[in-house]
Length: 490
Image (spheres, helix red, strand yellow):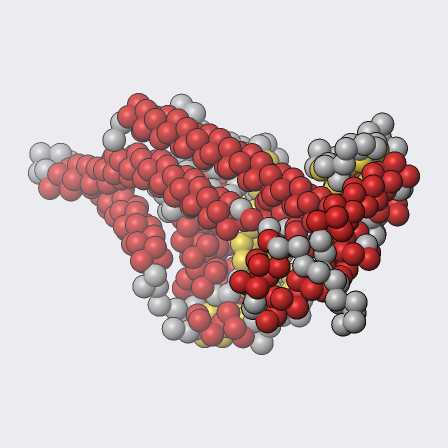
């Protein structure tokens, strides 16, 4: 897949994802507005119902306080209990007489006119002279407001109060005194006793501080599901793009590896072939020194081929997870001394040296001697190769109660900070621009990390461009990390 095609797909999917997020956000915003409007309507309807109930309660109470009204109610209740509906219609249709001996009263037309006149007169006197504080029981008002809100599924705390037309308060019930101004300006209001013919109008106002919390809580399942699905889509999209780019990068690295490996294999094979032809050509006179030179060339190139094959095999084994360790008691000082002795020749060819500073008090660990030796051979070989001057490589050891630490310090070209986390990846090589004076496949450090981790240890690097690099390899004692060493024996 070409780079342009990948970029095009990335842009297209990104635009589609951004559009999906915008549409989802607008839909959620519209739903929140709708829910808020429904909440406001529920509160306003509740206040209107409270106002109606207060007015009915006051009318019923005034009817009961009138003498003739009480007697009428008692008579009507008696008739209702005895289910004498026909008789009641007859009594209402015909003016009944008053039975003074029985002590009962039946209202006639004059009495009913008097009753209506008295009730209307009392109603007007209340409107003119009655105070709103006297007309509204605070406990009854709070009970009615709470009941009506609860009927509509609103259980949040609230403040309520009664205000005149000019905004002055007649009564306020506040949870927090700081909310008085908010309550005064609350949009949730209903006129009390709106059927009054005279008198100043009063308004019942309610403020719910947790209104937005109520709306969000009612939509919480929907919001959570939408957010979860969006995150899943974004994560899947990101993971897919990352996989595509990694696969593309891996394909490029593999192509470079094949090309590099082909070149590296051709060179020693061609050299060996030429040396063999020269030795077999009878027309060419060969002195003992020339024969020795040809055989030395064949041996060196053969060794080079072996190292190339071994490097590829080591990487393949460590990457497949089939590496088998044979743990024994290993003296790291002895292993490092062998590494220094073998690597000193290659360093001396470039005018450098390899040194060992064995300062660890304890240097015996459980591990695979061959693989541990390969770890330090790789590190020293890299230190010698990536040095533009005479290489100086120092291997130093230290120990504590947990394990042994080996530091491999060089004076090479260094590793940029941005590349230090990638150098242990398989097939990765630090970019060097147009310079290709150092051969390799990016397999050594990947193998090194795999071996160290399978021994329960760690490896890290401290470096920067110019001053050289220091690799720190820590191998734990068996008693120090039994949980990690156990897996090494598999």
